[in-house]
Image: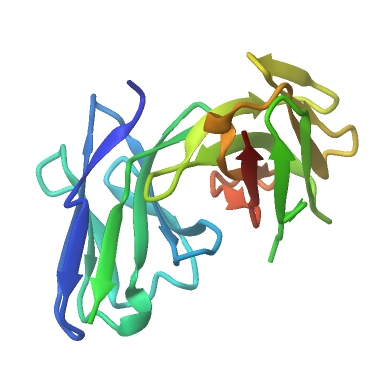
Length: 111
Length: 112
């Protein structure tokens, strides 16, 4: 299985609260992504992370977002102060050669 | 920024029909990937293309990497109800980045 596992599958949070989304690789991968998909729209790149450092990030990935791999295994996306417009599906993916394999996603609902 | 336009946006077809969709851009891409997304789930990789002109099949799916490097095509033969979903192309630019750019998606509905 080339995919990654994401938790939680669904999270509801109050506007202004912090959320942490988690991605658990199946094996010892090094290159990860976070993508976002607002309902009914296309999949948008947020950030790539290689060997415990941010490799690239998009304009969406502002100071409210951060990523880390605190224990060398789980890869997390933190949103510090959620806004209504952060409601979306968030996908973790890993890269193998030039192919990207996506997790099942976390549906984040900000109310 | 780079954009990938997919057409058609949506299509309704009868079971058993063949399907064609494409992905175009004004920019050159190094790799093309085609994904299928079911409702509430993540994109699942269907086919990967690496060279201009390359034609690759995966069961009933066939995809081609356009010779100009600016487009790609996906064909599904003899569609079945489980082909329903959204199909996305994703391109890897030639600029040395590993940031995949996703297309706008083609929503496919199959009528039994």
